[in-house]
Image (tube, rainbow over all chains, first blue to last red; front, side, top):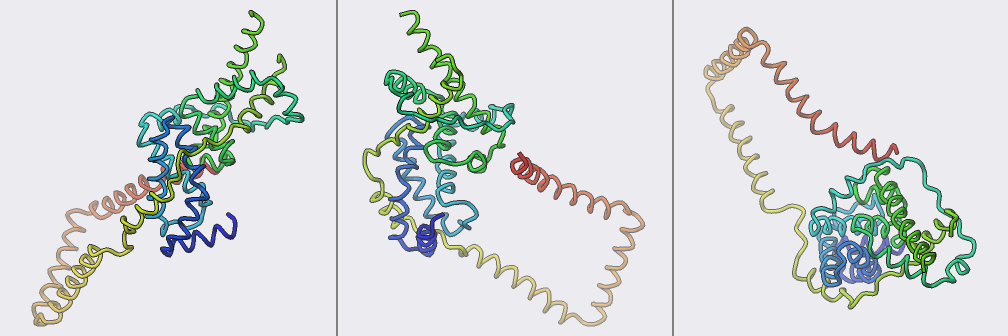
Length: 188
Length: 124
């Protein structure tokens, strides 16, 4: 956590609304984005984001700083998502943990060259959007909110293996979608 | 695109370049107006004060009662206590260890699953 954010959190814990307002401004887009990816409805996502910050304000005196403030916020929004989507928690638990080895991050030398084909890029973006909520949650926390696997496991209170499995399977679905695109090119 | 590495790279880049969804409107004003209305719950509530008061009064009442009892009544009470203890030892010798193990089992069932979960999460 940045020092300035630590100071803001400490001030907000003591009841300073201006410090809390700064924190809301800083984090609202990430919280909203996470909620939107999971519930897939703008109005519901706005409601959830708002509720997240109201709950954060109420619970802030209990925040001990053991985790980062942002991961603490993501935990609140995730719990609210569980309330809205009762099957979400179960579908995450059902992922299992069969992918136990470390997943290497592919090294991309020239992304601009690879993405010359805007059709491929658009196809993949659409495929990401259409992933199930459980995969959306994991993917968003990993790639947009930039949490490590360990932080995601801690935020969602899931075993690390389940997090890795979920992200691996989400990528498998994207790979299948890419293969379908290739086939459509061949048959055309 | 037969190359799996190339596919992985494409997918990884698509995931990383996914833009944040733009917010239709800022929620700051709404949040701030709600937190002005919904006050934080106090750490110590009136319930806590009342419970503490009742416990303190009970302890005080027991102490004053014991102090004000005549010595003979106190001695009789002590004898009855010893007799009760002896009665337990003779007639229900398994009661005390059973209670002890029962409490230990309850404590274990409450504390071991969360500890195991923490260990599993940290170990992987």
